[in-house]
Image (cartoon, rainbow, N blue to C red; front, top):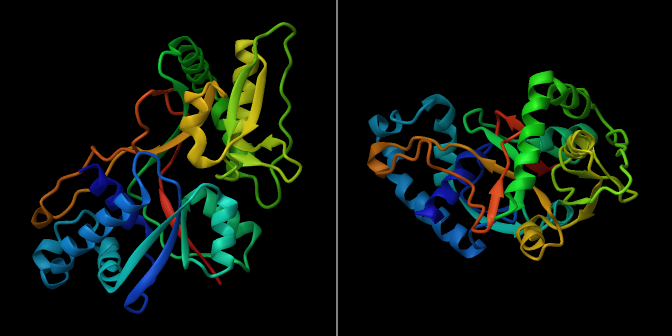
Length: 304
């Protein structure tokens, strides 16, 4: 069941302009909680299950927002997606430029940032305003005291408007170029909080060319550190290495982004996944309250 949930999440959001029948190689950041092979198997199974809907008008109309999804169904049946996991955004971008893959799948704010800064390299093929995703902080299970501190800081930042101010500065009004530098307040004698940053979701999770962490998440961290009177120390890890960083206690905190709800499938597919599709983050990890949400989940960017 988990494999099907993972696959449905991807195909719902990745299908863009109608392409000729055949294979389409698709890049996605490593999806924690399943393997590439399991993901592919479930994706193929779903495509097979949905194919008969193309000849069944009544069944197709059981989808929510039928008009938007009609093009998706045609695309899914016409072309077989072959999924390739990448542990970093850079590796995935290089594969796209080298034509090893045909498209990449990323959160909407990330693709908007990439297309704004590289208008000749990327174009948005498809977006779907139906599956919200959130970002939280991840902690090793048992580190409930630090989670409580972060939750309280996040709640206070929501209440006093700080979260919205940081979002406007580092996401909504960013434009092109690198986000501004984020400065951390230092507290003498404070035990540092070690945070793993991937840099794979610019401008949300961002590492500048000189190696310093900046962007929206880093600005949130700086504010939390100031409120907790704790020093923040950031380190770089691959997207697929977040769980290991916590498990090995190299890091105290990681950024965790996940989907929060699924889509209702037609009855003839036999599954109602509304509200049960979740990004699997595995055992041994607990999450803070979410502090950022985007309405449009994933979009496709193809190299021109």
